[in-house]
Length: 203
Image 1 (cartoon, helix red, strand yellow):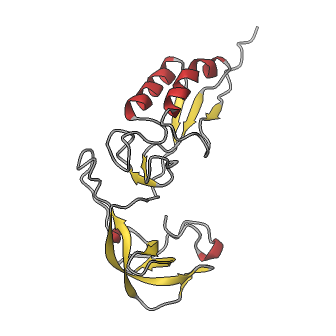
Image 2 (cartoon, one colour; image 1 turned 90 degrees about the horizontal axis):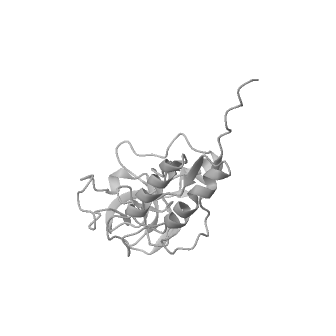
């Protein structure tokens, strides 16, 4: 008799946009890991778990890549999904039952800056972001990240205007537009969708 075929791998998306912002999602997932394993789920896709710009943030509005629910920042220690200890407990439960965890790593988004910084920009055409529609001028952009709740634990890097390609708000004039930041080696990414000239203009 031939050997049985190997088990098919099955990945469960373990979140969706409208999960309650009650900071209990990791606990809910951990409680269901044994049942999920029993029905053949071999991995869970976790939501972006880094500290977002608010305690209700889904994680695509990343504030701090090094805070997974450990530091008091943006109105909460935990993320929307839970705190660091609960995330580690979920990992341990997954390991116990043979269920892997896939982390939705969002490395090219930034939101919820701590302060504004002055920078030189040009406005671009919202329908074709490769076309400038103004001369260079100075704005105050929300691009300063100091992470006061975390300090320098895990990383001493702070984010400033020169780390960004663009922004969409001028705090000085309360103006919303698409601004390309001007400076050495600045420009939009060449590896994104070409819709509207350059779709993911701030990524």
